[in-house]
Image (cartoon, rainbow, N blue to C red; front, side, top):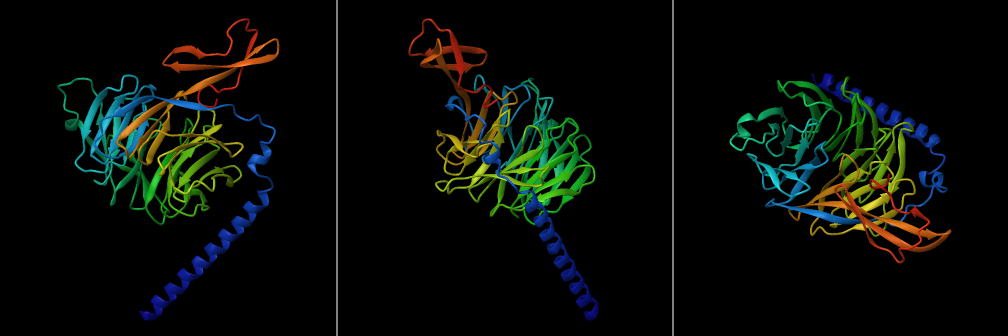
Length: 403
């Protein structure tokens, strides 16, 4: 028996050695493709103009740290979850609370809106993913219609509906991700490969939606095939926990934010990291990332209470957004790209929109800068140095957050 055990240990050691050798060869092949940096390719791309954002709404109602939020497809409603055990559905236009659910546990670390807007999913330290149908009947008890869809052996860290209300992806502290059928609660596929807690996931932005990316405490970002349950790509360049991952709008790349105080961009076609977004002055971890609608901007929330806005192509920081009084734990750009919402440990969520700047020209001469603000569907000019004889106006700003 002892001989058998020794033989098994030797076989395992041999397999580990072979795996490390293959990893080394893969890195060598990746290095051959690393002929130029992204910012070098983008040298001739026009720099972004002045970028300023204004807080339009502050959503107050949680009694403790806001941990997660998600937009509804209607571009108006927001769901948020908190350490206080509450899940709240907000009207971001009016700041009214439309629904509130009290969970059986604190630290509700995950929440998501269904694509139809008719349900929300949430979970946390209860190890479950619960789905609540939304109704505007005040006499109807939402908790009575709750479905416990997913059951992990450790806390639920993230959840996301697929392209329909019928399936949901979950990530957990048990080191796995899983795909579930919402109606029956049946496990459809499990994804094993992370060596520690899985902290985040994001579904590929395609009609088929057959892949997703996950990140965790093992410093790995892994791309999965939902049909086979296999990891198809893995990236290990971060030096600490990966807190957030987000696909590029085209689906050809994804960004990650980590406790190592960096955000990184990975190109799936080149199978390698192509950009790092960091500065020596940034020493706190990145907790959440998301792209603008065009993909030109990367928004990153940090533990030092700030949100940094990065030029994806040039790798430079174009703006720092302040306002929160504690670490920024979550942020998401709205589906139409006109605003984004951030949640913080200061118990609040903030909805921000961009201020647009226009260069005003008369007969080819720049005579002033005009600032315009937008709220809802109404736009108006608020300042200009001169307002007569305008022959042309050349935009220096960006519509739809960088588009």
